[in-house]
View 1 (cartoon, rainbow, N blue to C red):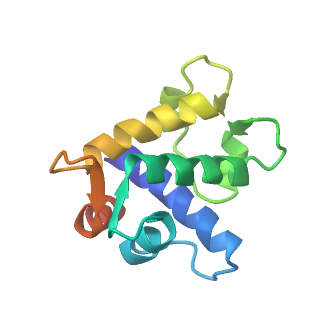
View 2: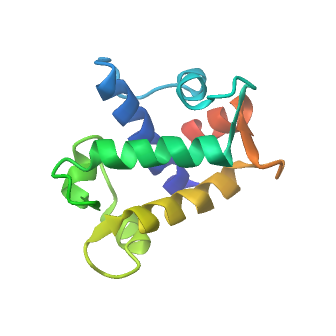
Length: 129
């Protein structure tokens, strides 16, 4: 669950930075409001995928198609062990594929009722942990 929190914090920080917010950490309601494109008060896999892809390209400061640990650290402190675990090819950067794979695992972990969506409570628990 700590990996889920890391990536959700990256998402929140990127969203907050994009909107000029002083507080880098969003709550579940803010995260849901930004990510829930169809207005059903849930974040489904497609919405999650789209938002995480947007975040990837936002955080990719040098626009090389990969995230370095230093790029991620611009928005959040990163445990190097977690970064290394997501870096499947050992390149010391995360490709979009590596990044999304780590996030899909986190989505599944956060989806406590296994309905393929994250509701407000699941998002809240993810952020708190």
